[in-house]
Structure formats: C-alpha cells, structure tokens
Image 1: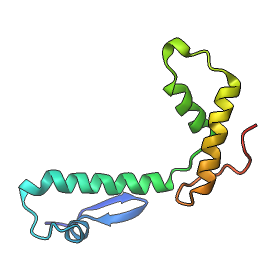
Image 2 (image 1 turned 90 degrees about the vertical axis):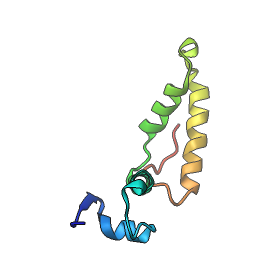
Image 3 (image 1 turned 45 degrees about the vertical axis):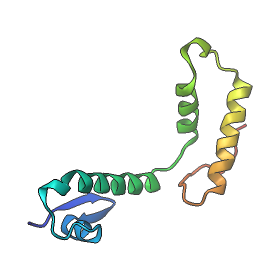
Amino acid sequence: MGEIYLNLLEPINLPDFLDQRGYKNFKFNMLDNAALDLSSELYKRQAEETPVTLNSIVSAFLLLEKPTTMAVQTTELLKKIVLIFNYIKKKVHIKSYMNIAPQ
C-alpha cells in the first residue's frame, strides 16, 4: 500500500491509522469497518474543532419546531437557548467562543 494522507486538522497517515485500529493485514472484506472507523475519527476531530455559536443553537431549536407550531414564543426559545448555553459552558470538551449568556 502506498502512502495516503488525509489532511483534516492533523494529517492522518492511513496505513498507520489502519495498523493502530487492528487492520494490520488489511483485506478487502475489512473495507466497510475500516471506512466506518475512519469516518468516526474524522467526525470526532471535526466536532472537537467546530465551535458552538449562538446562531447554531437558535437554528437547531428552530429546525426542531413543527411546521404547525412555527410561531415560536420568544421567551420559550430563550429559556431553551440559555439552558443549552449553560450546558456548553460546563462541558470542557465542547469548543465555544460564547462568553456572555443570551438575554
């Protein structure tokens, strides 16, 4: 196998990655599991580096609303956003640039 590098944040050396994940003698029938492991690792790295913003929280709550109840009460939405904001501030593994609670 040649050298293949995926450049997402820190480069991933694919042969080393496969060896570390137990695919030392890689066979074609291992492809699905190896691809899933690699996808999971890339997702984890991306999630660790993507900051949570107030806009993303508001957007997520608006997308969760049912079309029939789209008239969202501002006070109810704010309560949900503050709850998530407080949760994010307590979790050290979530990257966020928000320092001031929504008001």
